[in-house]
Amino acid sequence: MSFHELNARFRRLHKEHAAWKLLRSDNAPLILAFVADLFDETGDIAFGRAKMALDTELELWREQGLLDSQVNASTYLREWIQAGWLRELDNQLGKTDALEIALRFCRQLDQRETNATASHLRIVQDAVRDLSMAINPDPKARMALLETRKAQIQRELDELDAGIVHELSEAEQRERIIEIYQLAAVLTGDFRRVEDEIRHIDQNLRVQMIESGGSRGEVILNLLEQEQLLADSDAGRAFDGFFQLLCDQDRGAELREQLKAILSRPAVNYLNEQQARFLGKLMRELSRESERVFQVRRRTEENLRQFVESGVASGATGMVVS
Image 1 (tube, helix red, strand yellow):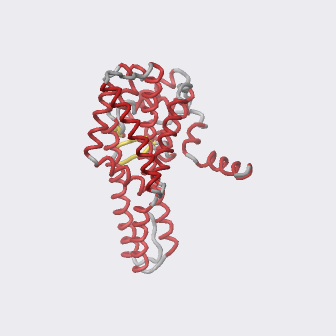
Image 2 (spheres, rainbow, N blue to C red):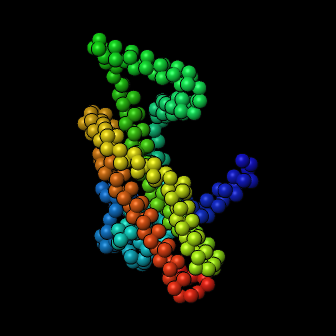
Image 3 (cartoon, one colour):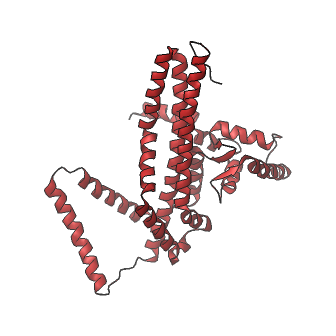
């Protein structure tokens, strides 16, 4: 990609992306500190509770000279929702993907792990090995790769049978457990990105249907096609893949027990309290986020149908968003 293409892309992101807008806002440190603390122990919080917490903080910030504005807490929260930093559903507030990106960026500036190179390389090597086998159409080549892995596993079994146990060094344990936390944190953000994309598709569909102004049959046919588009979008397929893994009881139980075992080992001391707590409730958090995506998808489909029916019932050639 050329310099001019990159410049155009970055200028667009600088202007449009919610995470970038947050990071360059004048009160970014206050906003990020508040929401990080607000959602420290929970994924969602009642709007009223968030308002009370922000009211308290606003009073302190003004006393300390950190804020001059007299805007109230409700207005701030609504502005943050409108900006794409918070999401609201059934009077519950949660973090958006954009907010997670901004928080992760700031935390990594202060917690940059310089010893994670080996761990990153191992992940890349494993991914390359798995993909090379998955896309190789030659049965003999696949068998050769599997035989190599089988021989390696057998060597490890023989060593264990002989009482030889290779333990990770303290540096390796620290590196691995921090890597697990970082990957898990990105994973939960993926659900928020799926939800954001579904909302974006919903908005685009409404605009398309307004502009098309077709007959009843054309509008209903278009609606059915667009609902399928929601399911077939990158967000829809990604979520379906996530959900299938979460619904696999054996794999879910295995992951839950493995996380529990890791957090019972001394390696957990390399995580701070918030990171350890996050990993401890990871499966519950993923399940909760997946259910939220289902709610958004169901509500989006229902609202689209109501949107079409209200426009058709009024006899208007075009439809107006309520």
